[in-house]
Length: 81
Image (cartoon, rainbow, N blue to C red; front, side, top):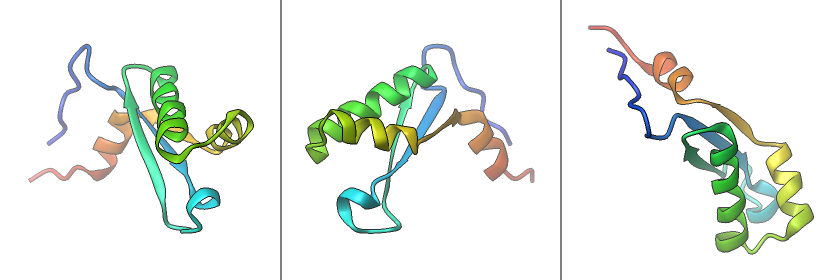
């Protein structure tokens, strides 16, 4: 079953590895937005507010980010019964 994404709800996911901040190679953060830019903006705010990152560090981490439509994640992980 594939869930339909409704208008006005988050449609993009942004995944950012934060191992350079935390030292944990498995750690990443995920943010969501109605557009790819909004998801990245949410990530920038999270990096600044929760991790204390500054300008160039945020830019570097955002460059490493993967930002995709949520539908790709849902369809890859869904199973028909």
